Length: 193
Ligand SMILES: C[S@@+](CC[C@H](N)C(=O)[O-])C[C@H]1O[C@@H](n2cnc3c(N)ncnc32)[C@H](O)[C@@H]1O
Image (cartoon, rainbow, N blue to C red; front, side, top):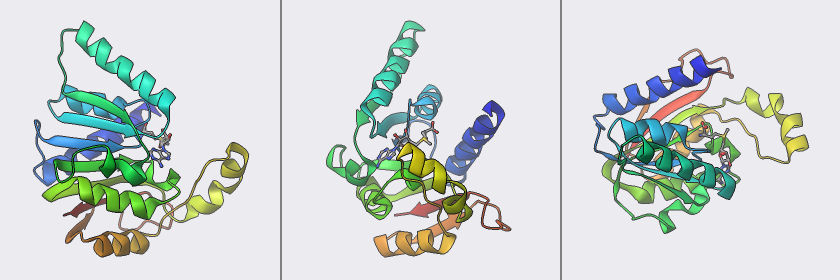
């Protein structure tokens, strides 16, 4: 599991590199959980803001800042509790070089709102990176889990994501996910404002 997560983190950094979002750039993460990716990126030199709907995750995430400080780092890292659907109301608009979401967009009840809110946070020319979001088969695989855990689990078709990104105003879209996805391989998409 750890190896998979690290491979995904490496893929995210390769995506950022590909679109020339380099350390010191300002990045916003949506649905950051306890903030491990935001922490790694801050240590790499990015100016990071992690956001997350669950207050308890933000409490844990804030411990990461303190632990870095104890180790002598002064990271550009902060965490904010907010739903991704309205993130643009709590951070500065048009101010981020990149916004990314890793395995969390499919949990948002209003994922289209989350895409629109991300657009509002980005500078013109900034990139929205959708990482490891599940494909259509996830709807059937996770149906029972979602019912039992009272969470929201969906899968996306690539065409619905691309349609929504275009409708929101993103002008360039790149897919770095598997070409032969067989409806189960996850989506990796980059969209430029
Ligand atoms: C599968 S976890 C992934 C967490 C993190 N990206 C990671 O890889 O560790 C999904 C996260 O999305 C968060 N989440 C769900 N709905 C959300 C929403 N509408 N806005 C912000 N975060 C949300 C959950 O609380 C959870 O922490």
